[in-house]
Amino acid sequence: MRCPYCKTENDKVIDSRIANEGTVIRRRRECEVCGRRYTTYERIEEVPLFVIKKDLRRAIYERAKALAGIYKACEKRPVPLEEQDKIADDLEKMLHEKYDKEVSSRTIGEFIMQRLAKIDQIAYVRFASVYREFQDVSHFMKEIKTLLSKP
Image (cartoon, rainbow, N blue to C red; front, side, top):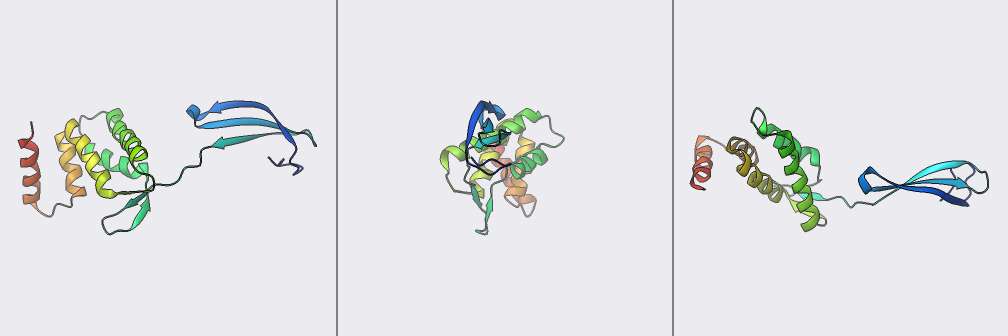
């Protein structure tokens, strides 16, 4: 590691600690030339996951976008915020386990809809109406009939 003060590469680690719930290692270092101390952080370099949109564009996966859709679908519904956040947590876990570089937006949408259907049917229909781009009431009715036919 290069000292930020004198720019030499002679240093020693004085202290190492785990930070940010185990995702970061914080190291206190001391330069052996100038004697000054400084802190470095070691993190895992994450490769971004790309979402393939319906029109085949690619965009970097953003948790905030998935959460915004979930929150909007659950707005004014008796769905605890913790359950909504858990959907996003479980989604990310599934994405990291099954996909390395790319995932379709359809996979993400279907996952969220499956989870919402188990928690709140109104939230499910709200999310489905945006995700599936319902054009008229007949699309709503078809989705509701499908929902009602499931046990």
